[in-house]
Structure formats: structure tokens, C-alpha cells
Image (cartoon, rainbow, N blue to C red; front, side, top):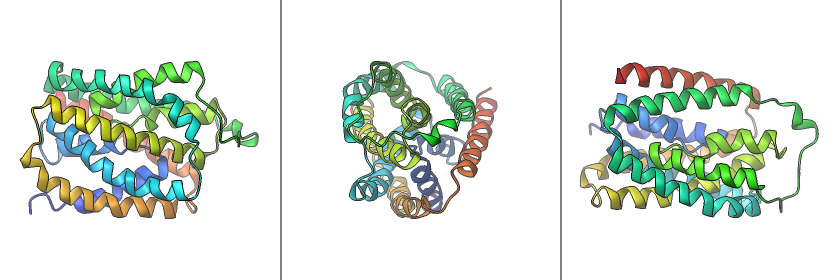
Length: 255
């Protein structure tokens, strides 16, 4: 029962992740390292496994409501997958524990600053074309996003949503739905890749996975229901604040 706390924590993280369109790994990995005292490699594998359940729960609602821009997601797919394979290899075979903590903290703060720097002026002229495809610059960025995701279990939605909202002028609900379907695919591929590179399934992670998976399944549903009621600007401010705190704490913990 030492892992029971992953159930309520899973509800909170998945609810927040579904509202923002992020994968949740940017919060899961620090929590597993700092609170549950796991090493970064195990935390990343467990995080990806839990995210599959949480995002699968949340994205199903967006699919039924036809909010996903499928062409945009499909056109980025091959580039993101390439990045995932590179990032997963670096994470499991190259990077040391302390280095991963410092990188994780730094990336959390970078994402927070990135979100804070995005303008909201585009909301007056939204792009409502569901057949839009990713431009060349976004596909190229997908490789970088995939590397970071595979390396740290951070979903590409953390980078993708600000980009497609500000540059492609896609509404928040469509951006979240599209990011979630990409994040779900990322979690499945990265989870398998990390498991193979680490030498196979780790039985020690089964119990925490079950507790966490139960929580994120519920949170994924709650996030979708709350998405129609929560103020976007307040949500964004909360996200930035939480990421800054996590980033500073991760770097301090590694030094």
C-alpha cells in the first residue's frame, strides 16, 4: 500500500493534463523522483505507462466530439516518432541520473516561460479548417519535440499547443484534442521503446502502475467535463506557476 497516494495524485494530474492538452509527464516524473524516491529511468517508464491510460481516457471524449484535427496529427507523426527513438536511447543508455534531474528541471522552466510568452491576440481570427496539415517548420520541430519527450517523458503537447495556437490560430479545444491524440501515440511508442532498452518489463513497477492508472482514468474524464467550464487564462497561469516551482525544485534536488 506504499503506492496508494498515486491514485489521488493520478486524478489530479490527469484532470489538469486533460484540461491543458499536456501528457502529464512533466508533473509525473518529478513527483515519482522527488516524492516516491524512484530513479529517473524507472520514473520515466512508469510515467509513460500511466499516461497511456490517462490520455486514452481523455482523448476518447474528444474523438467522439470530433474535435481532433487528424491531418495535422498524421502529418507530424513520422517526425515525432523519429525523435522519440533518439530521445529514448539517450535516456536509457547515455544520460546519468543527476544530469537527467537537471535537464528535467531546466526543461520545465523553459516550457513555463514559453507558455508565458505566447500572445492571445489570435483568438479573434481562429482557423476552423479541420483538414489543415503541419507546415514544414512544425514537422521539423516535431523531431525536437520527440527527442525531449522520449528523453524525459514530457508530452509534446507542452510545446505543440502554444505553437499551433499562436502560429496556426487553432482554437484551444481543437489544439488540446489534437495534442492529446499525438501524446497518446507518443506514450505508447515511447513506453515500448523504453521497456525494450531497459531489458524488459520491470515487475516492481506493476503495483504503482495499477494505482496510478486507476487515478488517471478518472482524471481523464473529469478534465474533459471541466474543459467547458474553466477559464483558459486562469488555467494557463496555474500551469506556468506549477512548472516554475517543479523546475526550481528539480534543479535544487540535483545539486
